[in-house]
Image (cartoon, rainbow, N blue to C red):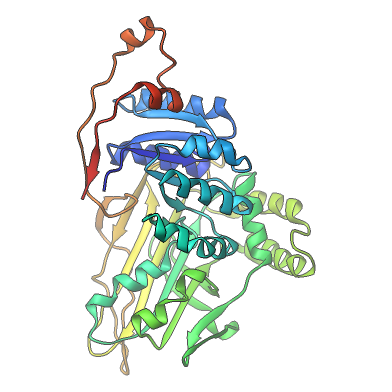
Length: 401
């Protein structure tokens, strides 16, 4: 499969800019920074071209509420990463990707987007495309953790995926979207052959290791888990998400839930402001995201665990909500077993490797590029304009395996 161009919608935002840097750092593909504000997209593209060699960052204007701008922006993109808070516009954004023949990844959390994409399944499959939804650090693709452990077992009985984060929210769409999701919160686990509501007895304490430590995790409903019982043959299955800090968990979350039950979006703006303030005021400095899978099986024992931690940085309350540089820590060495069944709890340990999105290995045949001096002397459009580059620059294929 050839991947020449990766477009990040909302590419200059907090998450989008971090993703954009990772693309240039860890792949040889070209990057298109897209968003409503063309000046901000251009500014980031130019900054990235100074930061990374190869002049691989371009920009374009794209508004999730404007289908023609989406179709124009996506044309020629092999992969679209939706890092914008565009859940109300998921269908038109996805249709633009289908029309362009682009694969898709989004980092949305609200469950409503999953149903929209399911409705487009025939078109997605008919076009031979791959769509991955909810790939952000929350919920963190827990079904991937559950499936990753399957091959280690002779019999797979129970699986639970846990996610925790320590982060500062910034004012804007992400905070508003999170508050809306709290208002729509529901909790289910799979047990005794069906999905059932989960109460207080399903709340669990999980040790994610440093720097997150022991966290209280609450069951949640995730659409991506629905097909796993039949796929894996497990008897019990659940996804659990930890809180953020005492203020967000004890004040913002219950208020958002109660007001959301009265009317969708009620008090959203004020609660989003409280969320931003509370996450900055009461969350310890430094950011981290942890994911853990605990499995029970007979007669063998295995588990998967990962904790994302940022590289050291100055203690600052003004840091962006997602760190620019991450490492991934893996450890499957610290396990404990119960008398009746073998349960593995793996705590983050010593093995460290760079964190990358995806599991494919990349290779690239770079095309020749015009030097900066030659570009300056010509009358061609600025090289950072994605649409101009499409029209003027021949492509050599990139590939990965």
